[in-house]
Length: 325
Ligand code: ADE
Ligand code: ZN
Image 1: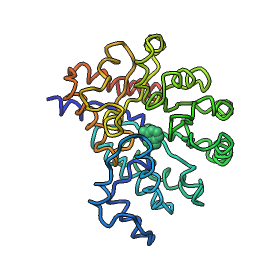
Image 2: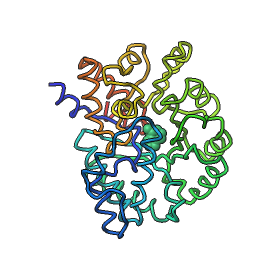
Image 3: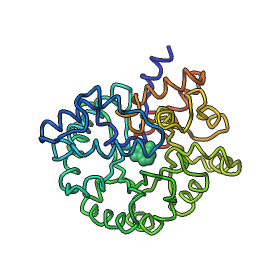
Image 4: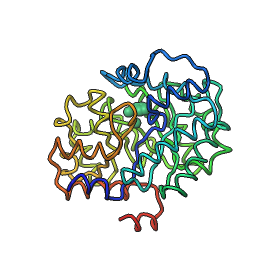
């Protein structure tokens, strides 16, 4: 029953890195297409390497994997494959992160990846009925100047981008480092989100809210260490885009049964469930719902609440939300 319910409920996915949807099979196909040498000799060997002990150990492989993305067709194929997989899980709307600096640093510009992703979004909407938006993420381990230059480079594509976000290595790279960039993004009419409180302290969540004026917190699970912050998040109904399988794979929680998603939900926070980097963490969005349902004994009513939260927390327009709720 619950399995069917999870799939059948209209869901929005609000925390999905498109480069993290690159399955090992596609890594090998694209490497072959472009004659790129890989450090692993088979799909199985690559998948076996996905054994992480923290965020950085994952990011090292994630950035290496993205190196096979070379032309417009690669970005199209990756994005179109994700949308098909998400649609099979009952995702009706997806807000997709992309990391421009991972590509521009390799000489691959907005004129390559934007057309590829946008063509896939148009086909996905027409062929699968999935609506989608793009969120440009700045890599926080790079400088604020680099982020500002990236925002400049994105200007010709302003109307194709809904929001900006902040990802990559969290510890030592607080949201305050990017205040000026986010000020400028908001002046351009872009919405803002940020990864905070995944590995970093609750103070980073507060900075993201107060300095970057974010509409959602990506992850945010470490908020429980600050009671006043939990009360604020509940009072202001700031959505958290939680990624359960990611948190277990990156050792934020030792086991799924230790995850605080149910606690946060029961404290009245607007919690949502998402897949983060599904090709690396062992599951797409329905797998994440299922893992939490099993490990935490979520009720059907709580599953319904999580799906509804994903729709209300999305940046879709009110008419679309009303259709899905
Ligand atoms: N980039 C891709 N996945 C990420 C995560 N879970 N945290 C920070 N940066 C990321
Ligand atoms: Zn993420």
